[in-house]
Length: 322
Image 1 (cartoon, rainbow, N blue to C red):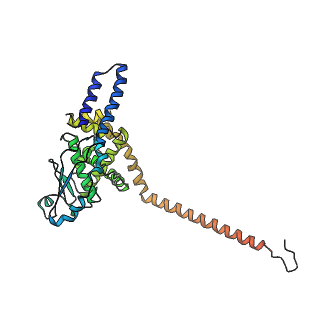
Image 2 (tube, rainbow, N blue to C red; image 1 turned 30 degrees about the vertical axis):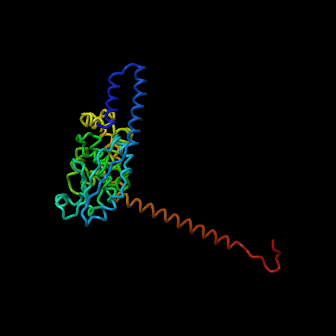
């Protein structure tokens, strides 16, 4: 059981055993100490060893990935509350003519198995949400670490993928645009729908990644960076995801969804309006009026300069200069 899991259980025991006024103060202090200790332990954790294996014709990308440093995920390990990274992680690179590649859709560039073996298809990179082979490796290693932090218990796909997308700290305008477009095109909002999209077509999978990342980022922003570690630790201790989520956030998953979709609805109202033909013609008209005004102001300045020149009289040869 991970160290953070044991600390979370200890915190739960404190909640149940101390209920006096003075006890609540002591409890708050002890909880703060336990949390700081857990995060400190995670921060000091050794990164997982990553072993790269590849056929001879993929030796170039394999050589590149062997330079990849797993300690770049140290912050992510802290986020998910994993103080010990565990056994080495094996990574296998495969060509497009391999059996696993032929069995996977073309937009799947890699995956992590239950036994912590990672399979990558370098020829398929870049593919959203990973723009490089390094990012793809980091994303799949993150999945392995999430599984270890959860004690091998099932983690909902949206939460798993949303967390993994935090591993490389990559969230740009493209991600926001994908999330906004997915919201506009969707008639049935809900995390259950997002999970279903992971089994759909390439565009549906992209929208599922973007929405999962947006939702998880929203949760971390609202409930703090200890939330993912708390949820995973409670999962590892045997709680259901719904119970772990409610205990870690103080709200049900349904309430968190409702809050998220209400905030995202602003995009669904404004983006169609901004992209409509009416709005476009209004903007064109305003730009034309602004250009006309600028031209008139410039003509007025030129005319004023001409008038000033006409009023100016140069002195004659016999007139004194002032």
